[in-house]
Length: 504
Image (cartoon, rainbow, N blue to C red):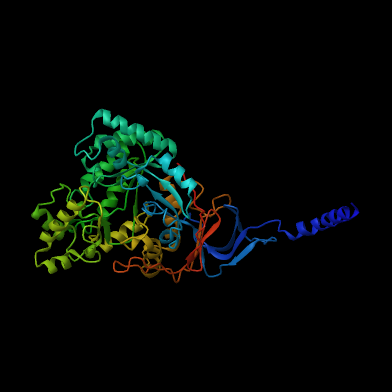
């Protein structure tokens, strides 16, 4: 009994020592970085403290016991980049570290793009799955028109009836209730290509009544561009909601050099009260399907193929990045395949379409990178006051945008070409992106905001990926935090599942 009592006294006597050794505070201080707060203001050398998932202080900060201090002298600290048009959710269950996104400083991806909801699921179900299986990046989502349409109508090649539109509205309302940012369309893709403007307007009204917004891969980015742009503006005006041109581009030779005309039209629309904006990725080539250049879906029309390879791209500029029907074609151009077959490229193009259709009636399992934009137009769209940046990229992407978009802007367009200054570029990647998406308490470095942050070297940051080597990680990113947790450091992802679902 006495021995037991003395042992208890000894333990109690030691408890103050144990408690005294434990730190009272345990945060992270990023000291003496050049901080660009995401508002567009110039950078200031100062310190930032993270406590939990939030930024707790900005300024002259005295460390407390247990605080981790990171010396960031000479480096830039910015809010984490918000990728407003992303496909990085595809396959993320198999790659939850989302290395391609995180390694370029992206902390939030906005998915459900081009009219396709993630995994083609109701968002309530998708969000529940993501909460049970978190990943390293935050995820917000639109509700996709093509997904809604296919659930109601299958792949019907016609306009929707009044009853079918009503059913789509019910599905969209459920997605809005689950926290969708709004409605997205991919009007150049099946089955949305068969919809009327009235159908899209009826759905946009549901998004508007819930306080949402509208993002659109336009009905045409080339031959019918102007009509497609007016359709977007009509939806913004009549549905009375913010509208965004997804990955804005002028994708045909006859349109090159008209970026100023496009922006003049958008600025005029804004003056009439239409809240129109755009996002853009920094490349002169896109990635989509072989079918996308055939709006009439006339896949046996030689004249249409010849037009596509002369006005919209070139045979040398069409790089196959996926072709499940004949995997040996991946990495080749249409010109190279045509040369091996000793036939005209347009004939080869139709042959490839036939193979793809035989492999899958829905033309699944094929992707192509196509060169079709002017560098001068891309730069002009990048510098527009109301454009923000995106990647339009994916994990394990055949296009370098999936791993290099944001470092490319900061390295090439800011440092090398002086197309815009660093403060403005960071604002477009962060604060302005958050504003365009309706995302709150992210996109700026302010006390109380979520601690999504990226630390990088402004003299080294650059993309390294190319069409030939699309998986090369960018240089110059030092560290990335998502909700206060380090998800990237020492040139590697940590794998921490720090991301959350962001709802409207």
